[in-house]
Length: 535
Image 1 (cartoon, helix red, strand yellow):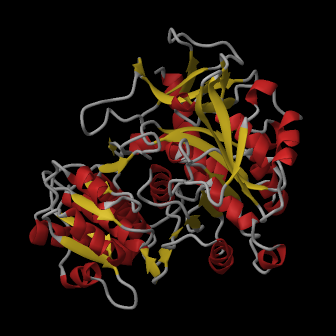
Image 2: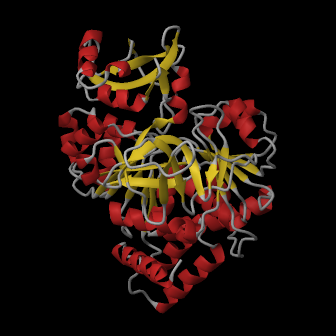
Image 3: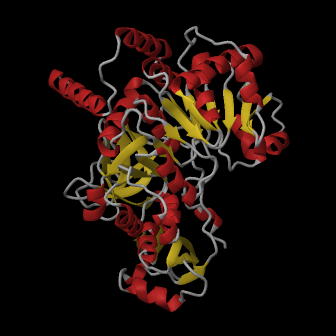
């Protein structure tokens, strides 16, 4: 990289940090304390908390169903838990900590404590059954499993043979809280930079463990981009609704903490409660998956009008495809504040679309963020022409080295195959056609479910929809659509067929339309298509 490019990067980064109020006049003592914390903790979650505790100790750090914590309080709990994890459970470089919790302060405390102890943290999906939990921890010498009380029976069924530590219990203090209050602080530098392991969505099979090494360098591009697009600011609350065991929720939380923005969490997403939290805490950024935005819009307009959401400067949607009709309805209701992000567990942040992009080019995922390269490659892995459908490859510092089992996705130089097909238009905006595995070949024609689903969702009587391919003796595969109506008996198959005929080529029309009560989705809103193919 040339000197001119390095200077440009430094200038853009400094401008973003000034805009986020991270670079500001503070006392020399606080600067020294922040610098010492950042150096010792090596850009881990613990470092962000310690730096904020040094520069703004009484500032709000986290709000959850239990109340509020300042940066100093959150840092103190992380220090105490780090000591307890090491001395009581033997956590450290060879003995990771497993975590199965919903969204609340304990997740942030454990991540920071693990970083201080030099212990990796494995975030488990709260939707896992006992066999999946056992498989995820198999071969790992786990020191302790931190969990919510609701998962106690599940963990007993998994027969893990490791200590269990309860982090959340209704109406009484959890063991994790008692442990933190009894322990002394761990102030020695960690023996190594700990890593966070998250699992892929598992929508096409068994989830795989992907380990991410979080450093200042890996966070830089995402931090600058989100400051520019979402207007992240020190002290401005960010409500993170997606689960923290997933890369989307966890990643935005880490970036919010990096600029000193408090994080608002709730154990279970409820649309009306979300609006109430936005008003009560003057939330400036809402982070959600598309199905959550849909549920907010489904609230009665009178109910929505009870809450003042004018503090919202931005909304970030990701984790699953954002239907153009949903994006339009949401911006019509809440203003031009919706952004759509794209990425994966393996590649991290890959693209972002602004409100203007979503209005001007419905269905786009936008352009690559700062420091990210996206290419559409053909079958020979050469760059595809503008408008030509190919394989989406992403390159950045966030791309993982591989899965925990030693396998990896396909690489083309420094770029990783996302497993998605897409194209780029003449303005440089990226579009996703769908997963390679989801493409339906019917009568020799390639059909991507996303296009058909977007057409279905544009009908005002459709609440949710998905499309799968099923075997067909004549055409190889035929399309079957599963549709959730907005109201019972409000839709007829012939209505939907007429609606689709006006929007799609004949070979893309579903041969069957099945009305369904609920589309099976992951906690981040991705459709689990394999559960529908034989339905």
